[in-house]
Length: 100
Image 1 (cartoon, rainbow, N blue to C red):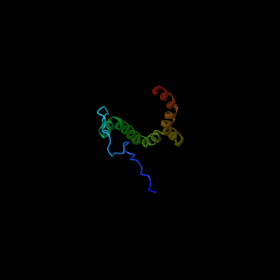
Image 2 (spheres, rainbow, N blue to C red):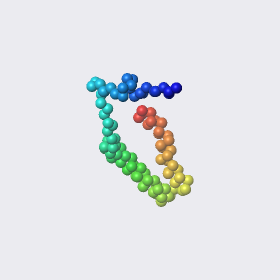
Image 3 (tube, helix red, strand yellow):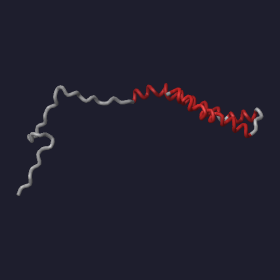
Image 4 (cartoon, helix red, strand yellow):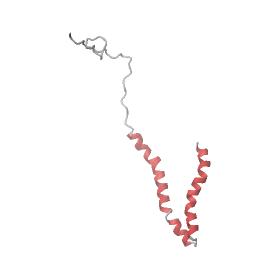
């Protein structure tokens, strides 16, 4: 007994020929690389935040020294340093609701 031959799955006719695409079929457009658009956005989006964080990084270590120079004790100096974090936590909800 001979094994059954499987029909060609690629086409229904079994002749080995494939149908030509219809002229109405839209051509696939290759995706464009996102690199040029991304490079355009780096300067206006990332540079302001970089400069802001750089400024905080430069100023924050000096604030306790300045507070001590003005005569503040260790407790008050710690409180002065923590005011930035306290202000962020307290005002986050109010400004978050405004921006949404």
